[in-house]
Amino acid sequence: MKKFFVAALSVLIVMSLAFSASAAGIMYIITPSTSNPFFGTEQRVGAAKVRALGYEPKCFSHDDDAAKQLELFEAAIADKAVAIICDNAGADASIEAIKKANAANIPVFLIDREINESGLAIVQIVADNAQGAAAIAEKWVEAMDYKGEYAELLGRESDTNCQVRSQNYHSVIDEYPDFKMVAQQTANWDQTEAYSKTEAILQAHPEIKGIISGNDTMACGAAQACIDAKRPDIKIIGLDGSDDAAGYIAKGQMVGTALQQIAKITEMAIEQADEYIRTGKKPATEKQLVPCIAITKDNVANLSQFVYTEK
Image (cartoon, rainbow, N blue to C red; front, top):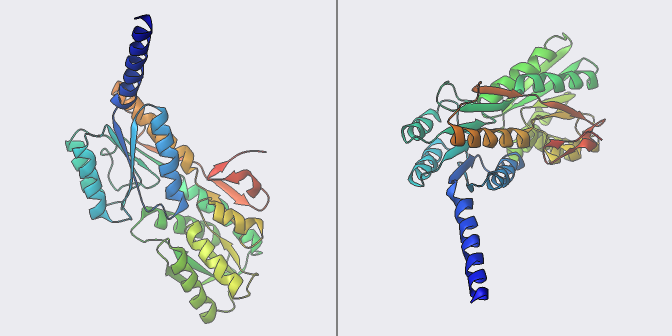
């Protein structure tokens, strides 16, 4: 009888633990496509943090499609999610989805990309793209010896980050009169598109000495195009802090990148979501900036999976 009682008690304890682990609720993590390791990190790190805090994670990608994002928000509402963590599909296009979540009393916590309206999301936690772009642009102008013709690869122009990064690259570069931009093309954050655009730029402007790129994915496409064209002299920068970019930097095939601390940003958003769910208290500041770290050959060994560790 005693053995039966102990066994039954053990089952009850296990059932109780299982219930308590799921009782905190479902937390949605919605990002752009995880084919980009940056966004894959958001889902990987986010899911681990959500589980650690006792919630059930559900991870989805909107593929930068606002209509698909809206469907995912509607799914979160149907699931009675306790919070949505989102790297959004557009500064204006995402507002409707967030308003729907608000109407259903589901708090939204934005990471990486801002929207063009305050007071809808509980927080908007982003990397300081202005600071990061300027920091790595300083390294680039030095590598270029403060002169020369260059090209720029832009991200998706509807994305706020595209504009901020480009403006702050130029806030540094345009201070030096001996630079000349001979081409500026959109590659939509895509590596394959950046490769083909770089091929065309090299053919049209064989005299260029540098390429500035709005993210690492495009920078890696540009770097590979330059390698294949036997142009190792071209100085290239990106912005993200990906392991792929780190590989090119370590080999001297890129000048550098600016690390957006996206693992830290994602964990911050989830911790603040947990605090809000438990206490109802909003953070003191909606818009929060996390500084970027300039990565060059000198410190690239400290970078792994979007985490920088001093060695």
